[in-house]
Image 1 (cartoon, rainbow, N blue to C red):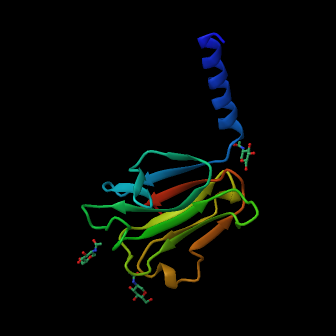
Image 2 (tube, helix red, strand yellow):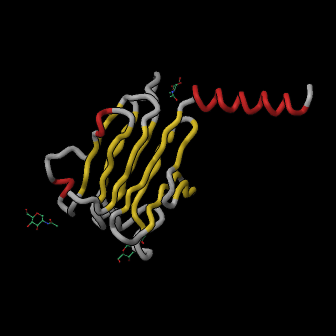
Image 3 (cartoon, protein in one colour):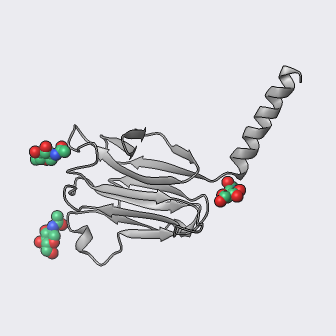
Length: 157
Ligand SMILES: *[C@@H]1O[C@H](CO)[C@@H](O)[C@H](O)[C@H]1NC(C)=O
Ligand SMILES: *[C@@H]1O[C@H](CO)[C@@H](O)[C@H](O)[C@H]1NC(C)=O
Ligand SMILES: *[C@@H]1O[C@H](CO)[C@@H](O)[C@H](O)[C@H]1NC(C)=O
């Protein structure tokens, strides 16, 4: 096969994969005027601000706003968002996102999230150290395929 045909076939295959594959995007909105949003999976920093798009499920990631080394690598001492974005399939319930202040986490800045491309922008926001004691749900399930998520810091309420 001519090299340009091979390249063409590869480009086409990549496009087809991009269109049919599972994908999820995380988007940050930081209104705090400082700090660096971090998206972390295990030991890997997936993003320090720009949108992050997964090919396939985005399993067990955390996020928080790092301000002058206040937070530990796993978000210790800071308001934490935990999420798994995954298309519903046998063996999982879909996407689940929550905000945690459970020690070693604690309130640092007002932190929220809302779903994009599914579940009508449902989400949650934690605006004070009291947020988990309120009746508002801090954990939100969504079962829309290829769901994306926005995370906000210091968003105007
Ligand atoms: C969404 O994910 C499914 C796989 O679960 C895939 O078949 C479908 O094409 C995807 N849609 C888009 C717009 O990426
Ligand atoms: C959390 O804050 C305490 C008190 O300032 C500090 O001693 C500790 O090292 C911090 N933990 C992390 C993981 O940064
Ligand atoms: C938490 O709630 C208590 C009692 O309602 C209130 O006195 C306190 O100021 C609140 N703290 C914050 C950080 O909002």
